[in-house]
Image (cartoon, rainbow, N blue to C red; front, side, top):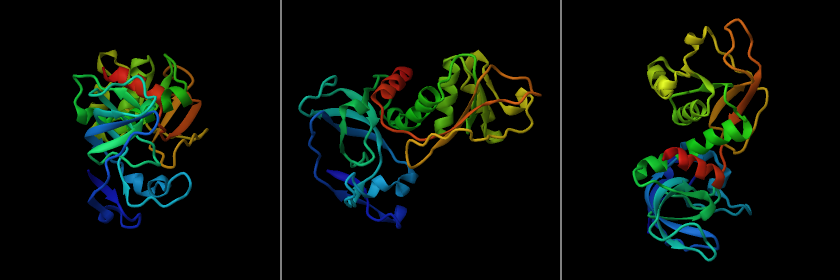
Length: 262
C-alpha cells in the first residue's frame, strides 16, 4: 500500500516521503480500516513515540498521522462491536504506525461509528481535538452546569469543541482569541447565549494562573480554566483550576464524542 512516512526528526517536512509499505494485518482485538480521510499534527515531529516503540526500538521510517475516518476492511481475532464495511472514525496509538496511508491497523476500542450524514473529512478532523476537549472538560476539569469555563483560542480546533461541549452541558463560556475570530466563537454558543468574549463580561484583561497541571501526553494542545461558580461580577476574582491539555486514546470518549457528532 502507499503511505506517507517520516524518515528523520531533524528534517521535519523535508523528511516526508511517499513510500510503499506492507498492508497491515489485524492483531487480536484490532481492526484494519481502509482510510478515506486522515489528519496530521505538526507537533508529531517532537513526540518520542513517532520515532521509537514502547521498547525503545527505532521505528523510522514511521507512518505519520493518528486521526482518521474510513471503512472497516478486516477484523482481528476476538474483535467485537464492529462489522466489515462499517463507517468508523478514531485515533491510533501513538507508538503504532499512523493513518496517512491507504490502510491503518487500530485497536477496536479506539474507534467509534461514523454517522452516515457526517463526511469522512469531518470525522477525521474530530478525534484529537474532540478527545482533548472532552477529557479536559469532563475527566480532568469535572465541569458541571452553571460553572464558568475560560477557553483560550475559543475558535480554534480544540477551543471550538470546548466551547460547544461546555455550552451544551450548561456551562458559561468565556472565550479568548483574535478579534477576527470573535464572531466565530460566539456562533458556537448558538441561541443559548452562553458564550461571552472577555469585554462582554466586564473583564478588560484575562490572566490565567496555572493552579494544577495535568499532562497526559508529551504535546500539550490547549488550555482550559474551569471556575467553581457561575459567571462572577467583574469586580470579583475567580478561583478555579487551570488545566494544560493533551489527549490519549479513549473508547469512552470516542463514543461520547461520536454521539455529539450525530
